Length: 382
Ligand SMILES: [Zn+2]
Image: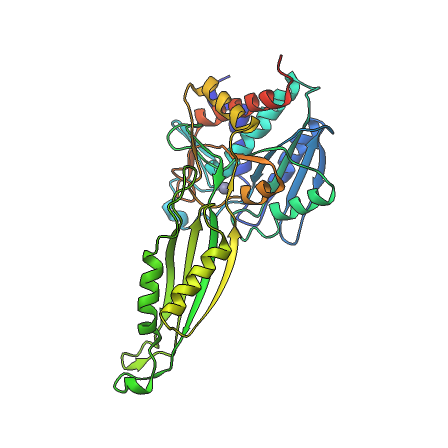
């Protein structure tokens, strides 16, 4: 069988052809469900509002190993910028092109075909094997994995090991494993002044002037120095709005948004306390709203990390780097259940870009790596 016509590439193409712009699923989970049903999985669709979720499980024993992923994709943007239509899977040279090829329909296909081969070889494996799939990862992520985790908690189902198929790799598949993620804290700051004429500043209070010192302090503060697993916490100001558009008016208010990506050396609570200290020390009239969109998680050494390292070493002959960099992922909802969580997927250089693509050979290798991980975790070694 050549690389191009492998079951993994064929399935990835089927999934890419579904226009599942977040939070739409557009039939992806039906394709996945049919494959898993044939393998004897019991299916539990868990739709919630406009989101499709699927929990599918094979086996009744502990330990429980889960493949987690999402069927939704980010919008394709300007169609003219694509060399081939984003929802027409296109094989060209060494690559498969299409929206979601790398993030993460390719990984989903690799997980399914790995499972198919694994169950053919080990129909009576130890433990249980499950899929946690959502169509709400790229959007708000309120009704997706979080909703499934609530269901699992109610059913008293405990995940022991979870591989999330997010595109973690840099140059070749398996060179980077994400064994944790930073936290993310979004802040909305409003600085209140008093509107007036620029010629009469004594009768006004300029919120832009009020903001200059505290924003400079926020942007240059060292929040921590990170540690061996996490880079230092960083704050980025993403939006500032103030002014009426007229050159002779002092505005009345300023709105500013900033985000902190934080390590496990700090907490949202400690960060907010320090932000308030800075604002109060500058004597500004302000209000601050914030939302924690994820707390940091870290999977230290354990059976899952060891199995992933070993599988990649055997198949790729490389030693992966363990990393916690990058954006948030649904791992943030799964790790707090006590599960060991790893993110392992294809290369991420084209994700969310026009002409998103995945290396065909990488995807076939990824499927082999996933299969070997299943074997290392769900087959009694001896
Ligand atoms: Zn993704």
